Length: 90
Image (spheres, rainbow, N blue to C red):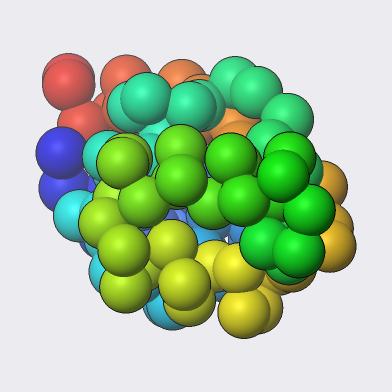
């Protein structure tokens, strides 16, 4: 998935995530978790730690740390980016 090719069609949140962890990892995150609301915990409580583990399983330890560092305590909506994905497909 080459999300960078359709950057102009991506929501601002997705672009911010991609700037942190790169477009390939962002594509993987959206493929698995796209269309959901995902609370980014700070890793202090068990729920935050389990969310961080889910992130790490999806995008790797280092990328998960970057998201927790930058979005810890926030609730992110991870859009499906249907419009951008359709453009890539077509």
